[in-house]
Image (cartoon, rainbow, N blue to C red; front, top):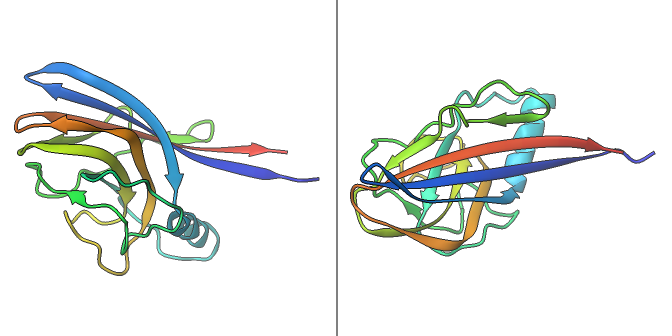
Length: 166
């Protein structure tokens, strides 16, 4: 008998300008190998649990690969937002194999004109950081850049789903 599990990251985005919803979109993308290894080590090998995960956004048209890591992400992080740190992934309890932040999305108060291409889930809150000792779990390029400008708000939701198949 063959038993398999599928892990997916489903990203949902909203772009707000002057309190008006301008655009919304969704996209599935990579769970990187570094994230899968961290998950397995934390669950089954006694590694230290990550207390809080964080969402970052990136500003170049880079398609994430399974080999991307926190230390070498392949993309350029966008730090042009007012929040002092990366927003936390404030997830609710898992249910039916899914955990998400739908009740409390990550919010980015944009403070410059940029084009945003994607996001990643990482284990450190420091904007622009890629130092040793931290993890990237997932990264998503949603296929086309979205222009943002000073005063815009990006709201990012993420659902991580694990399903078992036989």
